[in-house]
Image (cartoon, rainbow, N blue to C red):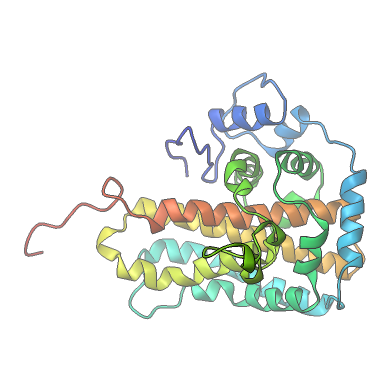
Length: 312
């Protein structure tokens, strides 16, 4: 899917445009030599060097050491297999369009993810990630994205659930190009304490950053059945297409997170890769939410379906 990209957003819907590729490379300090639309991960690897991973490795070890329970490899593997099936349902949702009243097609996408989420919360994974990983600063986004491009786990994992090479590239490019949206998400301690404000958000009621991102993405997906049905007269095919890319991105982020947790349970992931994949997966769940709002939830007059003639 390729749409005219808002220059302020530079968001890729499954395929990377020339402009988005240039923005991505510029953000990582690379002067783009050629302008080839639909650049692949291999193309970007040749232009973006990896960086020293010592700090990332220390963070990953700290996340592991900070767990308060034991990750269940068998449970995670079982639920990952179930979550894989959710990606096969996306084409059915595209064909369906707007759900019927009381439908649960979108909710069914997240059943396995919620089981994974409960387990990660129980063993303290989200709390440890909050304590040991930085928020989405420009430096952290740049460093982890450089590493992300150069680890085989990314294409291998996303290929399992049907992301094409172009779609994989779009996910990585979006992490950097949507860095402004990522910067809006603060760690829990950065919110003021309850006794410091008269109203507004206080940190006593804010979940850890990575948990907030993961659960938020699942809640947005769960709500689409009713939301789309309620607004059926306003919804266009383009909204459905864009919304499904956002949903696929969020599910892809969750699948990356759960895969990293399963590999950690098996003792089969490097410390720096744990940091990189946890950061990238959280970024994808955040980005999907941020753009789902503009793509589907806030239906302005210029985007809505044409009004039906009176009497129709």
